[in-house]
Length: 81
Image (cartoon, rainbow, N blue to C red; front, side):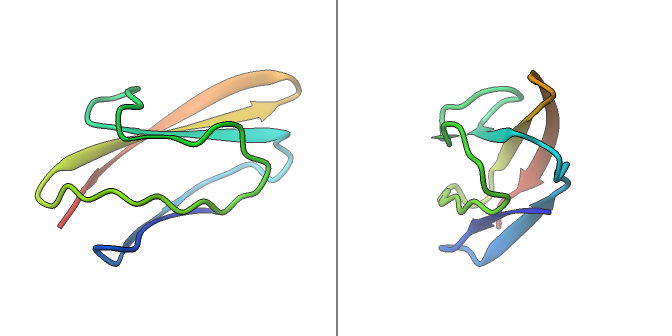
C-alpha cells in the first residue's frame, strides 16, 4: 500500500498499489485530476508523504501507476479535518 500522510493534521490515507509497477505519480488537488496542491514527480517507492493544510476541505488524490510501460490512474477523494 502507498501511504499518503498529512502530518499537520495527523490524518493518513492508504492507497492500493501494484507492487509490479515500474513507477508512480501522485497528484493532489481541489478537483478530480488536478495537481494544484501536490505533484509528486515520478516515484519509485510505495510510500510518499504529502502535507496539505486545508482543514474542512475535500481533496482529490490521483494515483498514477506505470505497469508494462502504460500509465493508468485511480482517483480517491478525502475530507480533511
